[in-house]
Length: 115
Length: 114
Image (tube, rainbow over all chains, first blue to last red; front, side):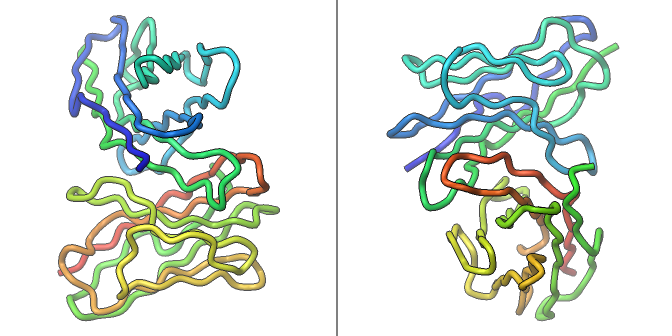
């Protein structure tokens, strides 16, 4: 069965510091992978997605993620965090060309940014 | 603004009651998805409709049902509500052809069951 693991429930970084949020997936075929961000009281916004090709994908707000098949990982990175990045981040997976493209989400990582 | 609208934004009700959550997809999107976000279960897929037909079911309780109407809006009906049904319910929509299309999420309906 498909699953997504986000090992870090809560992370605190200083403003200006680099960030890496971890995501591991379990999926039999080639996955479609996503990172979403949820600000307090808001819906989910797509940061970036990986379907195929270049394993380093760029997203909005200066985020990037690297797909590593050998490690079943899709970690999210940002070189310099801004206070406005404080939010909850969700990794998600779906399949390609199936009867449904429902999203399977990880449990989320709550990011706090210290001034 | 994703273009997906959900009403109401907040809903407070009592155990045993029934409520209806409404979702209007983006213009042109044929597929609607419902997700539940709770402290216990996290974000989980409930059900998907495509052009009026049920396409996939997830961990949706028998007390819950959904439908998609000819104008493509969707409603999620929750009945015999329990305290544990308190959650944020998201609707998402996509074009959904055989290849993947991005899902756009609405702002959610926060349901509180007292």
